[in-house]
Image (cartoon, rainbow, N blue to C red):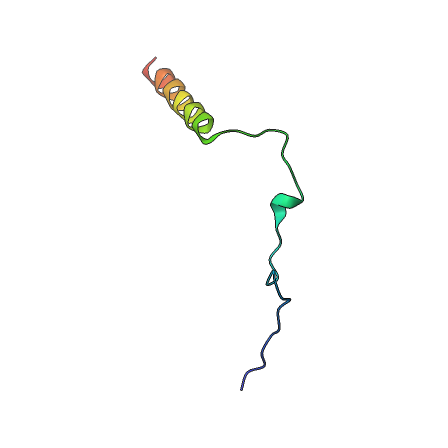
Length: 49
C-alpha cells in the first residue's frame, strides 16, 4: 500500500495570501473593462490613420 501523507488540520497546506498583502492600487472590474475598451479604441484609431 502507498504511504499516506498527513496534512495540517484546518488549512490543508494552503496559504492565504490576501491576509499578508494589501495592494495600494485597487481597481474595480468595471474600471478594468473601461481601460481595455479605451485601449482597443486607441489601437483601432491608430490603424485607421
